[in-house]
Image (cartoon, rainbow, N blue to C red):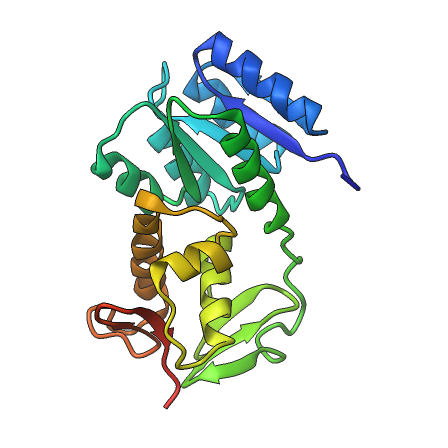
Length: 236
């Protein structure tokens, strides 16, 4: 890799930390480790890692709360949740709190490394530029995107999106009125060559995005659903 990236591993089982550290360092990543939620949150704030692997069930502070705290502070670092739970509600809850992805234990190291690489590859955020709203390109109605500063505006007001929400919006907006299935979006936006239950991630991200860019999320005007087919960005 051209530049060494740092992955923070927040996990209370030492054997899992050890194998994650070994495999990530073998791929050229620098790793940091924390064995409870409070220490994980502190290191995330102080060290500014490029990605966080975050277990849900942690001592002192659960992973959900760590994720929520970072997002409330405006930290857009990619977060991949690690969970032994199969319940759909846990996965959805994590995504709604701002996590980018989740991996269910037991997992293969090939899967972990692939998801780390896919998320880090897509996280280079440009610093907000002066006059970003003025130079943003209108895409529909009063919605505008500045691809240089990675910012989205509605009526000239900046909208705070996660990296994944931004990528989903820009992808759909760059292909107006074209319908994409959830499988298509997992491959094109998430850059994953496999799907399964992961397509639920798309629904949650679309819902969160609508809540931020739509005047009435229950009756959206930008990101619409074609029943039985998928989602599309509407340009009349």
